[in-house]
Length: 120
Image (cartoon, helix red, strand yellow):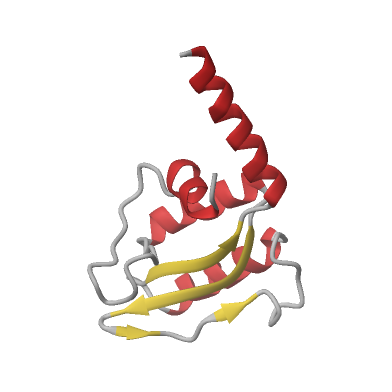
């Protein structure tokens, strides 16, 4: 399983991608409430968040990275703090992020999918 497929199936599922062409098609943007769900799921799986990029009314806001917070990408304190700061500063933002799904997690889900296919 590739990172993109994992994110689609396990993190972005049941959430609305608001990117209607204002950015690259592969980049998902979410409402504030959906992005909060994304961050909860990312924390659950131990996925790294390298950067958060907000968008508002046709313009991108300043992207923030885990390095600016001097935290590892998997440390949810940095992205939670960044998200809360964005929410406080501006309502109605759309949010995207860059992620890193650990190789071991991808391997585990690939194995689980293979076992399910064998049983079917």
